[in-house]
Length: 332
Image (cartoon, rainbow, N blue to C red):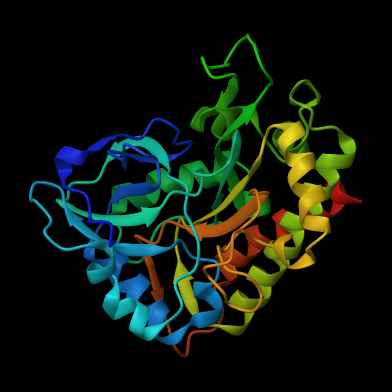
């Protein structure tokens, strides 16, 4: 039976965001992520689906749109029929949260990247040296240029926008929430992390001995992430776009025991040890999928467009290449 698109009354606040705008919601089962957006962001999803299938593989799954003050009568399947007819929908997204709220009644309905993991560790890496789009007001340009000048955006082309890392059962301490996740908010990447200690931020994300993520497991995760980041780099180098303030979104299983078990299961079926796209190599979507291991997506397309004739998005690629170098170092 087709699952109906939720109404606003069916939704609750999403509490696991690590960066981005306020106002993110989810359904009660946590399967869907609802993010306030602009028409431009929806247009980017649709254009990508129609003309950029390689990039779509690393975009969030777009299931439809929702008016936040109106009841929806269609189903997810009906809302997404036009897109499904044009392309193969990719996999999941994880939400983002910065404390600002978009002034809009429109929202995108996406699959929640954190759903299906026992303890999802999440990292949002904001891309770019320049963070503002051409149509940004002067005040915003000045404010964002100041962020670039004071953070790793300037030298590395990215910033840690936020992350949450499971510390193990019963974990307590500064910054650890009631579920045992250590939360690194936007101020962590804004003020605490610079070029000389950015490697430590990635180590904090990938390695957590108290949660059973030892050096061996952390390196394997870094290697898996690196393979996908290199693929994203290759795709972006071949296509022409501008994506200001987009992010790389990393998710992996933060429970060491569950992660090791999932990897062992995947080793008996190599096709499953891939970016969690919900589909096996032969395209059989009905096949039962193993436990989730990791996911890498490009997210946040409020200021994104395809720009034929203008060349690759070198502004974002600076950050993608920097992240790849760090993951290569940590995975070796």
